[in-house]
Amino acid sequence: MRERPVLTNNELPKSPLLDASGVAKNYGAVAALRDASLSVLPGEVHALMGANGAGKSTLVKILTGAIRADAGRILIRGQALDVRSPAEARRAGLLPVYQEPALIPDLDVLSNLRLTGTPVEPFRAWVRELGIPDLDIRDTARDIPLAVLRVLDLARALAVEPDVLLLDEMTAALPANLAEKVLEVVRRQGDAGRSVIFISHRFVEISALCDRATVLRDGATVGVVDIEPGVEEKIVEMMLGARIEKTRVAAHSASQASATKDLRPRLSVRNLQLGTKLKDVSFDLANGEVVGVFALEGQGQDELFSTLAGSMRPAGGTIEVDGPPVKFSHPSDAIQAGIAYVPGDRTEALAMQRSVRENIALPFSAALRNWGPIRLRQERTVVSSAIARLQIDTRAQGEVQRLSGGNQQKVTIARWIAADARTILCFDPTRGIDVGTKQEIYKLLRELAGQGKSVLFYTSEMEEVQRVCDRVIVIFGGRVVDTFPVEEADEPALMRAAYGLPRGAKADVGILADVRSDAGAAP
Image (cartoon, rainbow, N blue to C red; front, side, top):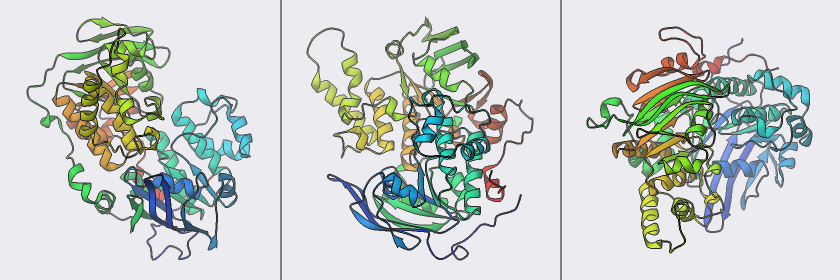
């Protein structure tokens, strides 16, 4: 493998491949973009960064023809481009991979490829290169796991060899093993002279991959920086502005937990089984405790949370809530037992065309047992308190879908705070959320634990374990293979356990920082 040198501003080609300036977009009274600019050089992996609501996704959609800008100029190779549709953007060499998979759920993979004119054999080659060797292209998209769908979206884009690949939180829903494959492939795009616009809230990925970063705040570009050691703090300051001191939270450690914590189990799981996915899962979740769950893709974590939330019925084992065993045949049974589910995919939990207040107030309506007057004053008081506590931006509250991803996730959590749920199941709740909102959620979960609530917290980002959890369990092959106190849950230990290796064993699990120099040939 040849080594690719890290390029600086002075070493990169001077003529931009893509140059956007003065881009603006309004949705009624809400300014999604005010004055955004972005200049990407040939062969450059360029980070686009900013807090949720800063305008990153809006800018990407304008560049790729999904929406029309109200103002601004876009140049490709020095020529003005009026991108009026995704097809025009595709012909110009601009191709996106969005946060949500773009495959039509009711069609098989092959039919999805035919719809976009994607060549099948290059697609197959990229799928294998991205770590999925046994894909059957006759499988229906809706039957394929979310993480695999995202990889297929990327393979479909790579198969047509775009000049500029735009990746919006590409690794946000991926386990570590698939994420590393994706990062290696992205790096090789730069080596091949193609450009990549890379949106990520993971600084380790930005450091490993990118040459420069453009930072947006409140719909405007606030600066461009070289990616070099120590630049992370500067980027955070640029992204947050005056918010930085309010959102800076120190990493959590077990020593910070309350000495008066009630160690009685709120939730006890014993020998839980479900098909081939859950084979033997046992753990306790105490009052006032945050227990992390870490696993690579497909190890049973999805089924565990779905079972505890009442969406799936286990084939064996027991679940106990505050002592007595329980059986859930529907999510409403889990909610009645005080268990609330916060999914990583916010669209699963929210009525996207309803307001913030309506979404938060849903448990009040669901709790009605008999016909009678709704206590509107009480409802409004509780909902308003939850909105204020989570600092939810309600400027676009006419529809939740108008909010940023971070504010949408806050609405999901606020609903269960308002309903006073005793146990909260959080499945990758910070996926695709900016650094400031992430830290607000970390702080909130610790506050809830301090009030005696119990939190089960699955995360695809290992560093979150140190920030949030008291303990962490690692699942491999449908079993709990290890449990760590937070002091011992460093990234090497978690990765070894996630690969099924015993403590003390050494594993070659890959290092993200090596991606810069790992530039093998593309398929």
